[in-house]
Length: 118
Image (cartoon, rainbow, N blue to C red):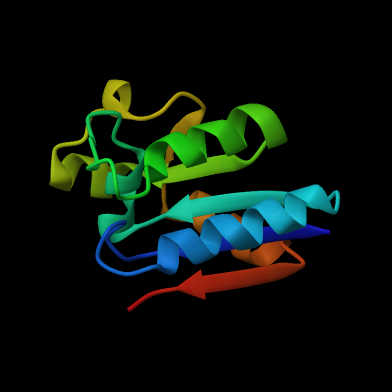
């Protein structure tokens, strides 16, 4: 099954991004193909310069591990990156700038589409 999860909220404001990563990991463990599309402030979760305090979760690192170890595919809205000053070289390895045409294609071709937003 092909599953796309879109997230539109900042990574450390609430737990939507954690929920998306939990859903993605569970689906990947069951053999499904999963794409995560980051839109709006959620693109900040891919910034390698994020340094959470020790007691908080490290969302970019968790996402990077899911990309490397479980083949999660992560698309980052390129316009959202530009607007927030995040350069492609600042993003975690394996996350790729993308756009709304790619998102539209994912919506049409996915078996399930989950949208997490505030």
